[in-house]
Image (tube, rainbow, N blue to C red; front, top):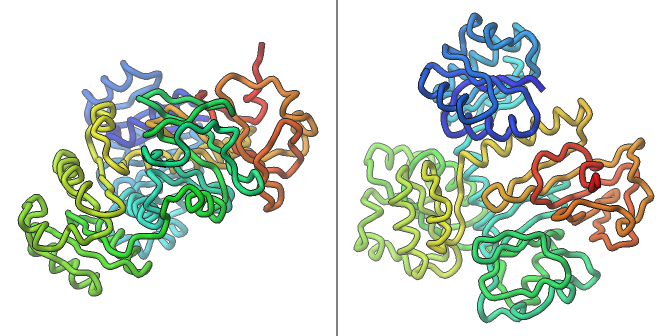
Length: 452
């Protein structure tokens, strides 16, 4: 595919890297010549220095032959204008990042009237992810497939868990309807087989229906009920969206924000929340506002370092869940060594959502990837494929398929019936198949086969 990306910030760069690795022709556009020089020297992409809302600049980027334009500059209005010009010039698909909450309620109208393919708000997407984690606090990360029928939940094995010492082949649901498909130990990620022996503090990814997952966690003695109260430090847009979602879920919300004017705005729009004007890094204030009686805590300021320190402090104070927002820091090894609870990266969520759309476009152009999630700091992909009528892998048992190493066929959704497949199962037309792998860039279900 021919893809143009306008804006080379965190999200734009992440998209350029991933899309170029997936055999797309990527051209990046940015006003900063140094940024363009750096990204083109490090990655296999073309670069244009200029204003992405200029027809001349887009023409230089070969907009007339583009399949997709993605506008992720710092300006919402510039992003929208880029998409309008691209759509008029080439009738290509367009995606705009729009962050201002003023446009939130008008998002569908703007998308429809301006002819955009997608509008994405990183803060709202991050808030949705945080809300899922507070709904199921046992999980470190939650991804859904097949329109919510199947979930992949990552959790850490407590030292006292009955899972410690068990082999995966002995871990299953009442009808063999769940699968542990990814394991991380001491920073090493593997696609485990049935002989993998679980150890304390392993990070495991479980694939199952929401009902089955809840039953599994109850069986191993882990509580899964959503939290009833949360404290959020930082009153930005992500906090606003998150608090609105949590209040609808019946969760009591306390927000601590330094800026008095912002507190007044939050009080006006979140009348059921408790808004405290103060410094959330003040230990005495956190005590006064009963942090130790909260079931969860969300560090949501604009400073990553402050979020990390606050989360480390709150981890031993709240009873169920600590969520940390990370905006800028890329020291993943250091951050993960701190043993924080759940980390939310808005830039990765945004990039992942756009990548899913690109994969879906490729679906209509030959690929059949329906859903894509990147796990474990992009080291693992979970993909959902649709089995077409002409698929050559139909009616071949899984044990007969010679698949690549570190490829696991994890689940088959057959007209709503969830199958955790064994060696005798096979694909049928219309099936939706979830594959978990450490390989990147798979576009068709046939790509799981070993070419040797």
